[in-house]
Structures are given as structure tokens and as C-alpha cells.
Image (cartoon, rainbow, N blue to C red; front, top):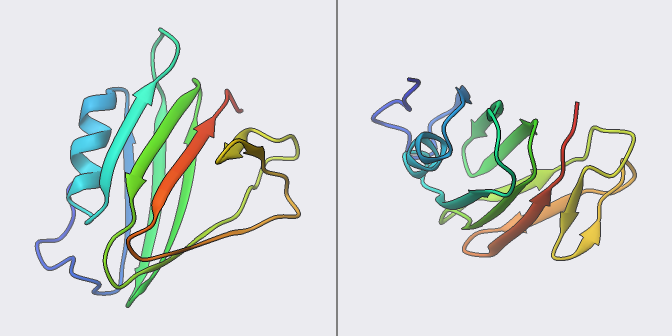
Length: 121
């Protein structure tokens, strides 16, 4: 199990989280100052990977999953989060709208995340 540095309070860091257990993913993300509520929407063996780069108050996260997931959470205090779809086909929807490679999500602190991820490769 991966863990965040105890001084994660916006110190520069890069952390990778890999898990096959949704409860573990929720627990690990809660250590990164997110308030996660991830739900696996289909049965099966989960392959979940997060890559999070924290640079002061700016955080970059890359998420890959093999099963549909609903990601609802609150963004951390004093952060600015960028989400960039990297898949050629819309694999995610943001607040009900499909995301494409030509779009970017910028999320200010204390805003709700509402991301639905469909199966991706």
C-alpha cells in the first residue's frame, strides 16, 4: 500500500497510487487532503491508478481505471486542480457532459468533483 508523506500539506511531491480495492483508493486519497467518495459501478477486478503531482497549491492528477467509476469529492483547501482527458474517445463525463481531448477542467479549492469514468484502456 502506498502512503503520502506525513508533511503532504502542499509540499512538492509526486505520488502514484495503484489499487484493486475501492475502499483502499478512498482511504489513500483521503490522505492527500481530498474528501473522496469513489464508487465502483460494475462488478469485476478493479485496476485503479492515480498519479498525483503536487506543486504548492497546484495539483495535477492522472487517473486510469478499467471499470466504470463515479468520483464525487470535495477539492482540497488552497488548491487549483487541472484535469486533462488523455484518451481519444470520451472516457469520462464531468457533471454530465462528455470530456474530449480538446477540453480541460480547472477546479478551484473547495469545489465538488462529479466525474463519471467509463471503461478505458
